[in-house]
Length: 72
Image (cartoon, rainbow, N blue to C red; front, side):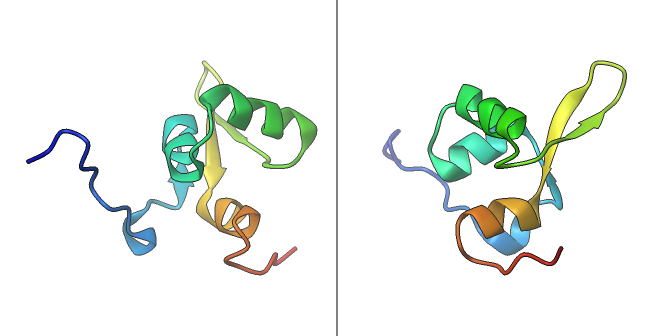
């Protein structure tokens, strides 16, 4: 198998809450960009645990991609 061959991401296989890394790989941008978008309100983050790790709703990521209508 070629090392450049990546596993295809299937939207239905994604969890409801995505990590910074998962979102950055899905959108093909830097993890820092994802964090900046969160600060600007473009992609709101949910903070979990005592460290304040960021998680992003799958629906919000799909909306950003234009694949789903915003339900708010």
